[in-house]
Length: 332
Image (cartoon, rainbow, N blue to C red; front, side, top):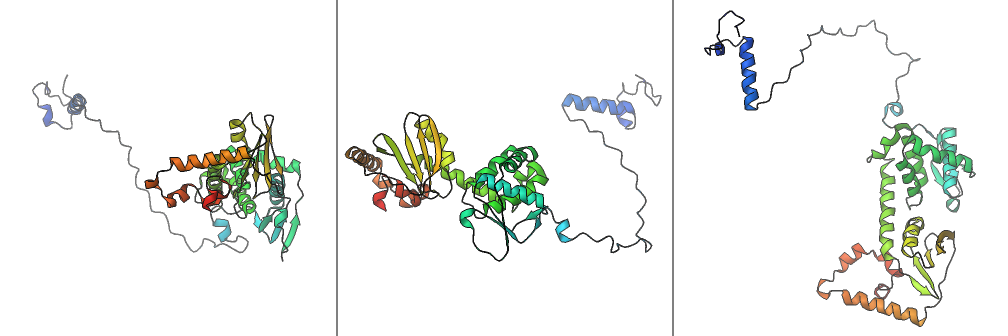
């Protein structure tokens, strides 16, 4: 190899270290680094040439005129509502299809009501009220658009929140849909947004109550039919039906919801939820009373006296469930 600077065999006599600008010196340096396992320097992008300073705006540039108004605060604010707020209250029959009909009416009229009330919540007001008739065709259009324009998870969230005890759940869900139709599926991840956070909180509260009631429901045997009563905050029967239908597949049972006046009936591998204003169970017979006594005895036997913690028990087993639990009724 001949030196580019015409120094014959300079690399052989180790004089190449004295020529830092020589390409042979750079090649030898890279070869040594490769043998030692040292990382090679990345090629750097050429630095852009400095540009000329931008001219300052002159007085000849026209200012915005009245025909070109400046953007208002509502237009420049992030997540601005597409629907225009209007002093009006929607009334509907309380069904899910009726709520979807309210959503259809709101988007077709481009208006955001101040409240949406079900039939049993209608009260006289000083603002205009509009009765929304349930239209199943319109409701199906709204329901089909949610997984297409937003996400499948959004449809599950909307229908779960509709069964929750969240105050003004219809209005909050409508605001969420107004946001989600514009933002798409990413609206579900806006956990701090005031139109999204309440829905996720209500969903979590309902599913926690469903999980608790799967273990807190206490059945009694009435002539071959298992019956139980519950008093939940949320409407949990649609979520409990699959669990108990699979667990008690060969039985006949009834779960009565005192709060929402509804009853889950299971028979012949089929279940149905029906409205019941009031339900009274018959008096327990001797066989049922003996089983209740055995269950109470089992509950007290497995307890460890030295580790009884009433405060922790109330945390894991809220007191509002005690009225329908056989082993806890004597503590009320």
